[in-house]
Structures are given as C-alpha cells and as structure tokens.
Length: 94
Image (tube, rainbow, N blue to C red; front, top):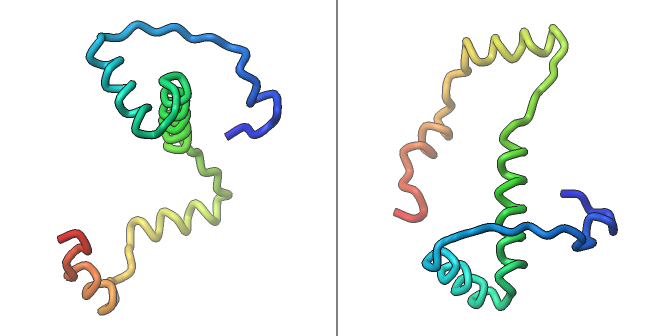
C-alpha cells in the first residue's frame, strides 16, 4: 500500500521456479486480463501480501476501553427482531 514514486520503480528481480502447468495457468489468466505474466503475478502477490498483513492487526486499548470490550464479548446484547429476521432471510445467492 506504499504509494511513493520510488515504490513504483521496478528495480528488483525475483526468479521463481514452477511447473509448466502452473505457468500455463498463470499465462491464461494474464491473457484474460490483457496483462503480462509478470504484472499479473505482481498484482496477485501484492493483493495476497496486503491481505496477510491486514489480518495481523493489533488493537491497543486503554484499560477502560479494554474492560468495555471484554464486557461486550462476555455479555452480548440480545438480538433485535430486525437482526433475527435478517438472519432467517435467505442469502441473496440462494
């Protein structure tokens, strides 16, 4: 998620080995997106790296906020009628 001009400079090379099947699969996907194999792989790897990093968030809370968090987890609010109706409704894809 770095957006500096320096971050956009392609000044690194990464070599990887893969099976012919994997390379063909990636080439097919890149062709559908009308991009090169390298650009496709960088885009996919970048998105995956961001997802991994976003999943590792640390939340720092002061003592009062932490106590409120624990209380909410230990004593969840009763669901409202609207929430019960929503949970009973079929998913849009069903």
